[in-house]
Each structure stands twice: as C-alpha cells, then as structure tokens.
Length: 194
Image (tube, rainbow, N blue to C red; front, side, top):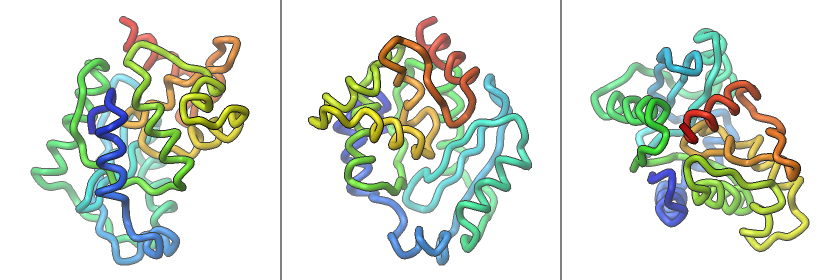
C-alpha cells in the first residue's frame, strides 16, 4: 500500500479485504499469522500478517506485552515464525519509520466497517508531514458532523504507521489521543516534518 495514496489503499482494502468475517469474529480461527517484534526508533514495533497481507502493526515498549495483545486479539489463530516475504514486509515497515516520507506498497489484511474504511482511506491521503482535524477528515468523506465517529475509527485502527492516524489532530491543533501513546504521536509527526 502506498501510504500517501488513498486510491491504492482502497484497492488493497477491497481486493485483500481481510480475513473472513467469521474468522475475525471467532478470534482468528483457521488463520495462520506470522509475526515479529523489532526494536525501532519508537521503542518496539510488532508486525503481524496473514497470507493476504499485514493485519496488525503496533508500537510499544514491552515486546512481551505486544505479543500478548496480538494473541488476545486473535486467540484462535495459529502463530508461526517469519519467512522471506514477511521479513521483506517487516523491513518496509521499519523503513517507513526511519524515513517517514518513503512510500510503500504493502498488502493489507484489515477488517472494519465501510465507514472505518472510508476514514482510513482519507487518513492515507493526508500527506506525510501534514495533519488534518477530525472535522476535516469527516468533511473529506462527506460526513460533516461526524468528527467523533472519525475519532472512533482512528482509535480502531490496528495498523500503526500504515494507516497514519497519527496525522489527525484536534480542531485547536492539539494532538488529541493516540492508541500507542501521545509521545509517539508527537515523535512521528516530528520525524515526518523533519
């Protein structure tokens, strides 16, 4: 997925629409998930993927906690080690963190409602180094007045960096919240602007 191209996000999000809804609701039953945690400039990053694409990217300080959260999200999935394809995907995620203006063409396996997908697509259209308010994102998707719903969709994003919810701020320019910590949100924005 090209993180600066909403069209490419939509293409990947619909053609690799994600694990089957039944499997997702059943905690990943029948799914095989490759995963790895690597140190990075923001602490540690966990990347996980099914055979269709990346299904989870999380940031944190504790590798065991990141693994635990992934297993809690998909308690019925089979977890396996990495392979050459996955290692390439992991490298692209790390590169996106080190060089934030680098685009990527990673396949995604992301689940969400039609509204969430429209928000996530709009987030990917925000250029690196720029921000938009929750209200502006709502207006861009034709849902004026849905700023709170946009904020909930941002909070539901499980693909840190790849779906750049860190680029969405409050109307007054304040950072608002961030699933992986407000300090990391500021660091990501600073890196993109630098």
